[in-house]
Image (cartoon, rainbow, N blue to C red):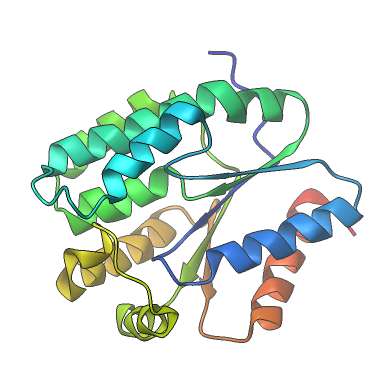
Length: 213
């Protein structure tokens, strides 16, 4: 694989309901004002094949799914997205914003499911061929706060959301460990603040890193 320039490759991470979608939309709007072309992809998903895999992964009627099956499905969806969508967009010089990427596998399947880290690393490398975002924002919100937000949305939990508080506490700690190990790429953002305050921090970080206005 010819690795494209990844300086415009940005990913957002965090437990569901941490506010990723809102911040991604704000970032896209701001970049558009800067006359930048932006492609947004959610994981799992983003291609016809990956969306079908997403349906299987989140289907609450599959409680029997094994942890190893789960990680391979997530990774298969990611590989398809990278090859079919992300690489062409980056090669064209466009911004790519990923709503979740490989750090989700490390946090959810590595820390959450407690799959050995060495195996996680091998699978992540195989799925991505080493293609990593230049910048990753982790929207940091404690699992207890996430539960409160989730209840306020009044919708039924999907298969992963049913995993329980202990699982999400491990995921939370996993994200913090990722930020600790990769401070040059990963920025931990306090997501308990007002939306505008969070975006101001994101915009200032991207502006300084990429010399935008």
